[in-house]
Length: 184
Image (cartoon, rainbow, N blue to C red; front, side, top):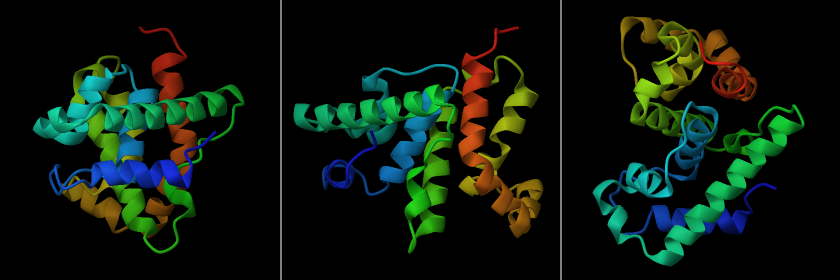
């Protein structure tokens, strides 16, 4: 079961409320963040999630807003579990976007990287090189990194297209890396 349009609209009403900073992530960024929490090495509490999303303004969330965010997180988590159990690729929310596809993809990747940055030590604990290799497509597509290596990747449209196409399968690979094999 995916989120309904009504759920997404209500979620974005919360995210873009005047009581929060202008740079609060949108639905795509939030989905990316939640995705990182699901496939990555450790989940976080809802209170921590609120702080990642809203920063110091997280204490302004009322119980109705928290309940709706919790509902959306639960639906996304269940969606991932259903896809993993059925051994199907994850359907990412930006895939159906026509007008703002690139922006939605980038926001999703930025949200995912926020999840990584929040718990970078746990992500890199097993094998830092393997983690970097797994995350390279998301890192590149996020646009957050401006080193010469990333600038070279960003000039390669064919490689970026391959990264985009690989994301759903990559999420399964990351999940299996952290949850499907014994830690060494």
